[in-house]
Amino acid sequence: MAEGSDTTLTAEQTAGAAPTGLVTGIRSFAAAHGGAKAVIEYVGKRGARIVLVGTDGAWGDQFAEDTVTAREACAQAGVAVENAWERELMDQMRPSNDLWRSMARRTMSR
Image 1 (cartoon, rainbow, N blue to C red):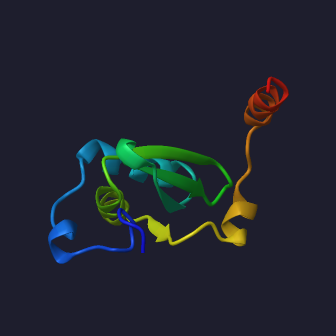
Image 2 (cartoon, rainbow, N blue to C red):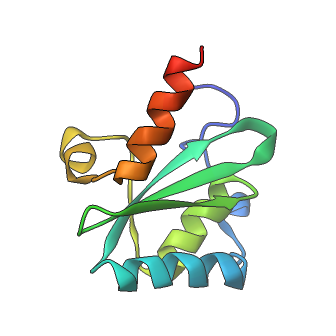
């Protein structure tokens, strides 16, 4: 298992509470979109990205200082964490037209 993997946790790492603002942000997203699931992605020195997918197909993200904090914040907010990007979760996502346009501009500018 790679160093820094979110699946290699010790009991000492899991102790503590996540920042209140992070928990509140996750909880409000879930409430606004009829519930949510999360996927946590390790992004190196920046920490961890929490990608939230609402039951209505909307999605957003939050950043935490590390994967342990991200998992704790999701647990405190009552949002289930998926271990990977499953096909069903990806099919549920509905990107906005603005996002499609911005992705097309980035591709065409290369």
